[in-house]
Image (cartoon, rainbow, N blue to C red; front, side, top):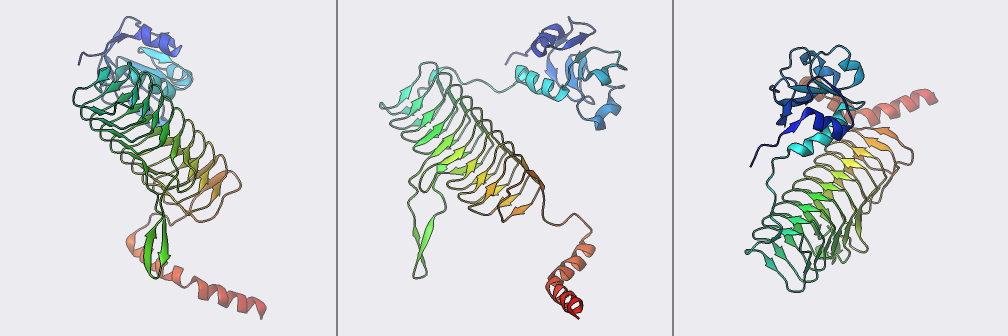
Length: 338
């Protein structure tokens, strides 16, 4: 793949940035302040890394106005350097594109509707009734189940499984190994044995959603599991049947959301957080790592649970004390009564 090259002036125009220094400098990549070379662009967004600014060998740096005041090198000056880096990162992507058209090794039902500007890779399976819109990419080994809809410019990576009756919006990114629309965990008891409940709902994915590698989103038991516009899901997340995730919420790796829980808009959920079923979480709620949410949250705010990191010896002592809390509380009540 040919190396991508842009002048610093071209990149400044993309960002609407103030250009400081040599606009003709050719930039061929992005890198950290510590590792960047003379033809690479770096950025300073976190003050922790400010100590590298004076010694960086980067050809240019994306900086906020305050940081640029004492920097004599080439710079792109913007209010939000991290956002600037995010936007320019797309100019240096290294992933190979799937050619437009249907690969000869793909298996596509004659009842599927594939836009001529879609790209269907090797070994892809597309079943009957599927609709694939303009600009969609379906990479090698992916499976699109019957009667599913894939919106414009959506990118489905290698070995993704989209089960039947799933609707995916525009500009969605689904990373390798994700499973969308598998059966929810629904079972009923009959004399000590489990009886499976057929999962007859679907999954609705909004526009501009990103779904991480090996994340699973179950179909609804009745009705649909819904992921709103702009949601970001990290790798290895479990979203159970009939969960609703509001617009622009971001969920980190290993989180698990039990059935029929509704997560509000603009929430952030840190890694390994868990949610019991049938809860309602308010908009603008922020959940800490490894939190166990067992009740609804009606007021926006920052919430956490669990125990903090400590030496193992101290943790064992505190674990013993934790088991004694009920007896201690009863003793305190008796003393207060007396």
